[in-house]
Image 1 (cartoon, rainbow, N blue to C red):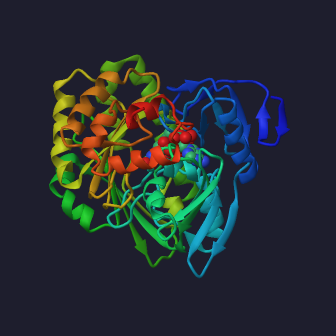
Image 2: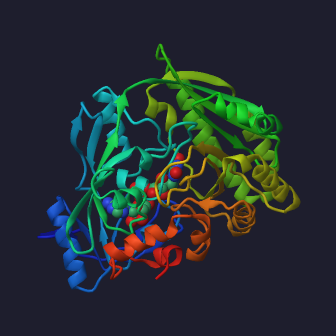
Image 3: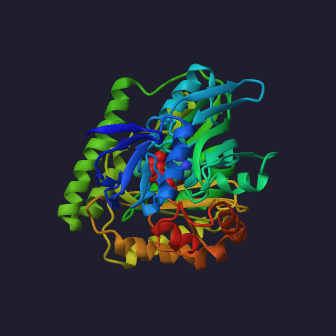
Length: 445
Ligand SMILES: Cc1cc2nc3c(=O)[nH]c(=O)nc-3n(C[C@H](O)[C@H](O)[C@H](O)COP(=O)(O)OP(=O)(O)OC[C@H]3O[C@@H](n4cnc5c(N)ncnc54)[C@H](O)[C@@H]3O)c2cc1C
């Protein structure tokens, strides 16, 4: 594809179609730019405003909602990557916004450093991941955005704005999970800590036992999560805790067999069969839930938290108050059992402590996340609609990057600080340069 270099970065000659990872969202931007510096990016924002076009920065398109879609100017991340600096006294790292999490994790490990917590893959960019509130699971440690100590962004007027707890604190409160609505993030400063070892214990456990012992499993582990296989009474649990070592990684062959062959290869094949013959799904689920056996390993945090996800799916995830998780899961299970749904993907359950970010799904509330998935290409609406009804009855807050049908009216009820965010947006982006259909729905016009 030909590209030309202009004052506002590399501009793509063609307006090609942009698609997300899940394959359920596409858009045709008027033009694409890949700025290589903050100045180029600010130039691209000013030029778009002059041309009457809206602007949207994207990461790697791992969101399932149309949050990153635009028919205006699409800002690509790939030339704005790398580590700007590490401050060992402050224990922070500053990275360019387009840096993939994978690159950040590896660079930190080489320096003997690590983030405290993260999600289950590391393909996303740091700006994309934090803008939607990407999280893993944690008793005491929260989302990736909650580990931010400072942000730099280009606002709608093309100016560069920096914020932290001390500087422009009202911007910092909201912009760490800014939904791409407040400006284009150009650099992020994260808190880091000396690299540590995590011991993972993966163990199948009956669904009823996990629910009965949920409070203990949560309180006795730094990072507890589990997967429930619909149509079965089985789960796989995962407990990650810091350890003094020694390092005991998953063996290469075992890792290939369990993480690639079973979790991706066989799982993909099982989903193909399930899509072609839905009646077979409960039997496949029973087999899948028994396929993985217990294992324990100790490794660098990012190798324990994240794993490859090659089987394509679509996802909805809601945060409910942590004390409501057991009841919500019982209702979800009852709904599945009453229905004629056939679900070949496990339901994932994680937690996060309350944080202080305006539109974080865990804002001011200890939370549990329940995620439902469907294999790509399988109709998901009936399942997600029924699951969403269960989640919203508990004042659930949907992940900003995962499928949901909520709007600004709903969010103004479940986020006590919703008005704070929209007032800041009115101030920073009065003409809605960063607007798209998704933001119009979730934040209002
Ligand atoms: C296989 C898979 C696994 C996942 N695992 C998890 C998980 O464990 N936990 C979890 O919480 N989520 C998870 N997600 C969801 C994913 O982390 C989020 O959707 C995330 O936002 C995707 O990041 P991205 O870089 O692809 O950003 P995109 O999806 O491309 O963009 C997301 C948002 O960020 C904005 N944005 C991007 N760059 C900038 C910038 N420079 N300035 C301002 N705004 C910007 C975009 O405009 C858009 O609003 C997963 C998704 C997939 C497909």
